[in-house]
Length: 112
Length: 115
Image 1: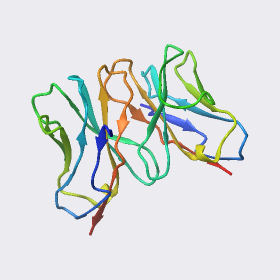
Image 2 (image 1 turned 135 degrees about the vertical axis):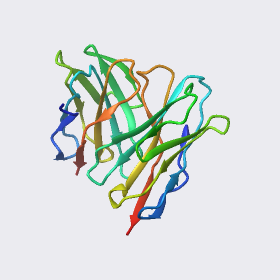
Image 3 (image 1 turned 90 degrees about the vertical axis):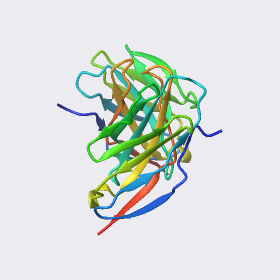
């Protein structure tokens, strides 16, 4: 039973560039949530996708956008990167209305 | 106001001993869920244990148990018989309302297990 997978594992970008991160949910899950974890902090919710629509969004600017595909996989896009976007980006999957979210290994993004 | 408070930035425990990691929460919603996750240095968040606000008994999963004190709004994680592999960051998180609401995390506690 495949768990949540994310790609790439590490990424280095420069300010102003754009980045796309990818996530495949755990087998059987239909809901994907994205979190940003800055160094020394707990994860913060970015947004959640279900049935290919953004269902909920945290306090993040429009530079952060996403997509969910018919196979439930998801992408997180960040435009006009800032130094402060450097973080670990975690994807979590679950069944809609189910309690527990299962996380992937994350993508470490460094913006120079 | 912080919804999840973890007051212990770091904890040390001797191998084979038990350790309690503290977590207090703040919510006015009668329906909520409390979670503990373990994050090793690799970065992956590993789900450990869940407690629903209406659950009558404290949750247990192997060596992990959740000491749920609703009136005090605390949800402490107890790890019994600590192992070297338990060394990691531990995060307490809460979900308010329905099952699809996002998780709110505390700042975490770094646990170090000493041989």
